[in-house]
Image 1 (spheres, rainbow, N blue to C red):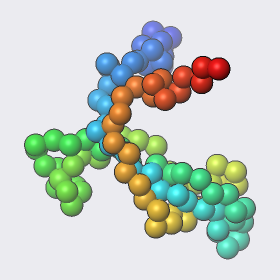
Image 2 (cartoon, rainbow, N blue to C red; image 1 turned 45 degrees about the vertical axis):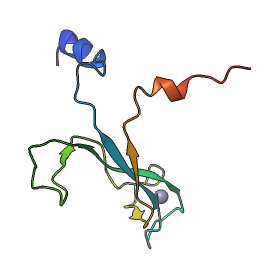
Image 3 (tube, rainbow, N blue to C red; image 1 turned 180 degrees about the vertical axis):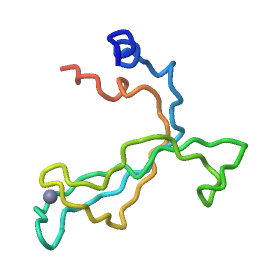
Image 4 (tube, helix red, strand yellow; image 1 turned 60 degrees about the vertical axis):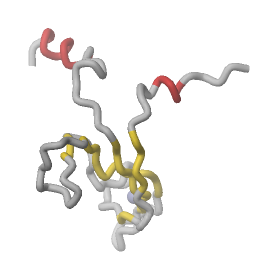
Length: 104
Ligand SMILES: [Zn+2]
């Protein structure tokens, strides 16, 4: 990869990429019987796009978008167990809206 290619990719903004309409997160736990460490946290199931052109991939016809959804423990690298706690998060805009420091 050239420096120009790397710079172009690292400087992408939300205007340059397809932004998902919603994402699904699941609370996962590290309970591997051999090396599970007890970690628990939110795992990305996927990012999805609603389109009139139904994909046929998902039961609701929505499109799954490229996303990191490895079910690997960030602490010990064992395979995570996904609990029954899946939650849908709808698009609300730029993350900076929620990431601003609290004014004191
Ligand atoms: Zn672990």
